[in-house]
Length: 112
Length: 110
Image 1: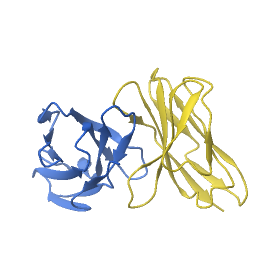
Image 2 (image 1 turned 45 degrees about the horizontal axis):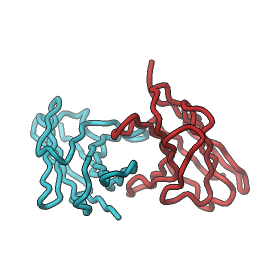
Image 3 (image 1 turned 30 degrees about the vertical axis):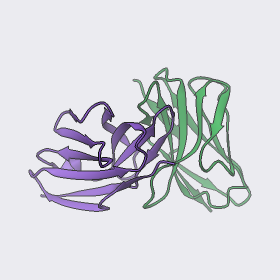
Image 4 (image 1 turned 180 degrees about the horizontal axis):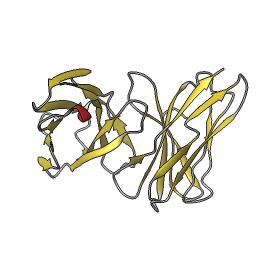
């Protein structure tokens, strides 16, 4: 089955710097990926998604990069703000499946 | 005001008691999901439903039950057979590939 993992459980960045959060997946047939942000005590919030036929997708201050060769995706947050402090996790969907497999999350702390 | 609502926010269960967690959505999504979140772990799928009157077991369905009598509602019952029910329970819905989550219910055992 699919497994999804994040490289670092915690990440601290200075306010204003860029943040990069990484994720690896195991199933080369995965065709859809999502990044979520979860603040303490709240439900996950959709940030951005990408399909396997794309390498890069940009949103407001966020960019997701997908490298299918090494089965790796990353979330880049530009000009990180204190409000970005949260747990971020990725999820992957196997082709033809309704189910998502979730990583364990990286806790991002922004230093003022 | 569209979205997914879960109630209650906190729920206390006594030994041997069944409790039901509510999940409602007004997004007109066909699919609904229940996940369990434990500290330091990823979300684990309990049950999911792709259409009214149909649902499937996820990875950790033992000790849980669901129903899907209406498109808008997907309640989860934590039965007395679930020996370690303390967790944060998240409901999600989706009309396509993306899943959107509710605010969650934290279940604690007295």
